[in-house]
Structure formats: C-alpha cells, structure tokens
Image 1 (tube, helix red, strand yellow):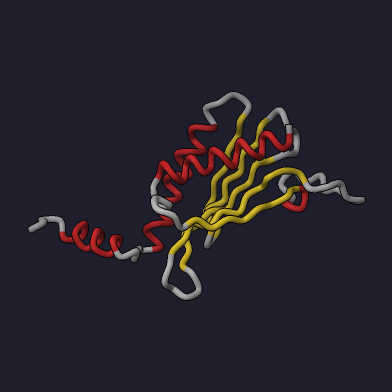
Image 2: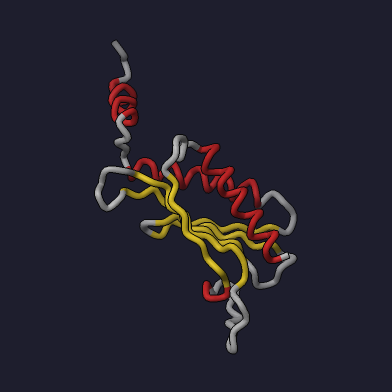
Amino acid sequence: MSNNWKEDLGNYFSEHNIYRLDYLNKQLFEYCKEWTQYLSEFHKLHTHITEETPNIVIKVKNANRYLHFFIAYLSFRQSESKNNYFLFIKYTVGLAPPRKTISLKENDENNYEWTEEEFTEAGFIEKGYILQLLNNRFKEFERNIS
C-alpha cells in the first residue's frame, strides 16, 4: 500500500480526468514563469508575467520592435458541462490591419490580431507540452511581424 495517500488519490482521479483546477493553474503559472525567465536571458527580450484571474498573462517585448508585444493569456478551465478540462490560450498572432486611429500605447490590445485555442488532447497538462506550445505561438508572432 502506498505511503503517499495524496499521490495515490491524485493518480486515481487523474486517470479519470478529474483535476484540481487551482492546483493546475498554480503549476501553469510556475511553468510560464520558467519560460519567461529563460526568455529574459536573451539580449533585447523583456518579459512580464502576472496572474489576472482567471488567466496568467505573459508579455514579451523584443527591443528591436518598439511597440510590439507578444501577449498570451493562459488558464486551465472546466467545460460548461463540467465533464472536461482544457487548456485555454488566447494570444497575439500579429498586428491588426491599419486603422484611421492607432493607439501609441505600447500595450494597447487593439493593435493586435488575436487567436483563441482550447487543448484537451493527451498531455495537455504536462510542462513540456505547454512550454512547446508557447514556443510555437511566440515564434509564429515573431514571423508574422518581421
């Protein structure tokens, strides 16, 4: 019999796709914090991470691009039917089409085109999966504004 009753019970529930959302979101914050800290080691990349319920907000600024940020909102959520959990991500994919009035505020979200996605496939709660997802979305943004 397992001496770690919490791990035993947690494993049982995770096998049945039952998770603790607060715990998952705390883990998600730690994963995202590691990702932003690594990015900030690169010259000219500046990162910022905050928790704004229900999301974790990541902003990455490449100093070579004056007003352009990669922005991502991430959170684990429960479906309306409460039968499923998913990873939600809303992120910038590029700059918005030109408008008559452009905001010069560097973090004005109207300056960007956005996409939202939900992930439920196997491994969607794993650190490697999430960080590779962030890598891919960040590189997509960088390519689109280059």
